[in-house]
Amino acid sequence: MSDHLHSFMSIVHSDGLGQFQQNNATPHTSRVATKWLQKHSSDFRHFHWPPKSPEINIIEDIRDALLHAVENRSPPPRTPMDLSTSLQDSWCEFPPGYLQTPVESMPRRFA
Image (tube, rainbow, N blue to C red):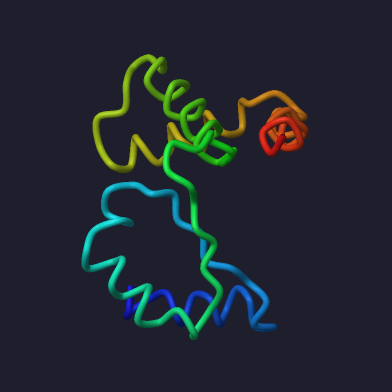
C-alpha cells in the first residue's frame, strides 16, 4: 500500500477530495493493512466498509459476466494472448447499452 496508494490517490484525486474505499476482503483487513491505514489516516480520507454489507460494486458484476462469456467461448483460450483476445472479443460482443443496466441499479443498491 505504501508503494502505490499515495501516488494513486494523488493522481486520481488531485483535488484531494477522493476517498479510499476497501471492501473488507481478507487482504484489506489484515493486521498489516489495518495498521498502515490507521497510521496514514491523516493522509487521505478512508471510507470504512461495514462488515457483511451488501455488494454495491458494479465492476464485480461486469467482471463476472465477462469471465462467464470467456469461459463459454469455443475453443477456450489456451495462451495468455488467446485470453487477451477472448476478453476483448467478449467485451465487444456485449449488447449496446449493457453497462447501462448495472449503472441504473446503483440507487437500488445504495438503498
